[in-house]
Amino acid sequence: MKLLCRLGRAFAVASVLLVSPSLAEETEEAPPDTAVGGTTTWSAEVDSTVSGITLDDTQLAVVAEVNAYFNGITDLKGSFLQTDAEKGQSKGKFYIQKPGRFRFDYASPSTLVVLSDGEYLSFEEEGNPPDRYPLESTPFGVLFEEKVDLTNSAKIVELYSGADLATIALEDRSDDSNGRIKLFFARVDGKLELAEWLVTGPEGGDTRVELAELVRGEKAAAELFELRKISGEEKKSGQK
Image (cartoon, rainbow, N blue to C red; front, side):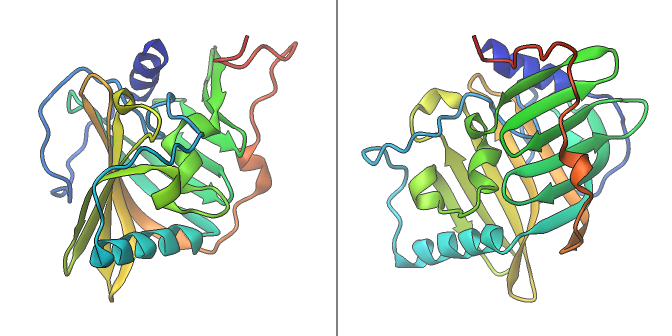
C-alpha cells in the first residue's frame, strides 16, 4: 500500500490545461494513489482458479481483438494527458517498444521520467534517486509482454463493445485488493486503437491517461529505455 501511495504522488504533476471530453466516465474525486503504469502490487503468477466475469463467445471475440491489438504493436509513440483524482493535469510524450520497454517524459516544469527497460519500472526525477519496481508487478507487465493473452494473465471484470468504443477492465488474478485498470479503445475504420486507460487504486481514486498523436512502427532510439546509472548500484525498490 505504501508503494502505491508513493506512485500516486510521483504522478500528481501539476500542469493544468483545457482538454476535450474524455471517452471515460467522470469519476469521484479522491486522494491520488494510482499512476500511469498502474499499481505496483500486481502479481505475475497466474491462478487458474480465479476468474472474473463469465465471457460468452461474442465477448471472447472482443478479448481476442484486444489481444491482437497489443500483439500487433512493435513500436508506438505519441503524446499523453494525465488527470489525477484531484483533477490535477500533466502532459508529455511517450514511447513504447515491445516487449516490455516504454518511456513517459513529463513536460516542463516537471523533470519526471517513467520508464521500463523490460525488467524494471523506474521513476526518475532530477535531484532524487530513482524508485524502481519489477515490471511484472504492474499492469504494463501484462499488456506489453511478448505474447499478450488477457484471459490467462489477468482477471477480466468488465467488458463492453460498441460501434465506436470498446472497453475492458482488468484486475490482478492473485488479489482483489490491488486495484484495476480499465482500457478504452476507439474503433477507427473497424479496428481498435488504444485511446486511454483509467487506473483505480485499492482504496479508490482514479488516474486517467489519454493518448493522442499516435505513430506506429517508428523505432525509438534504444538509449531512451536505459535506466539511469546509479552510483554504487543502489538497491532497487521492493528488493531486500
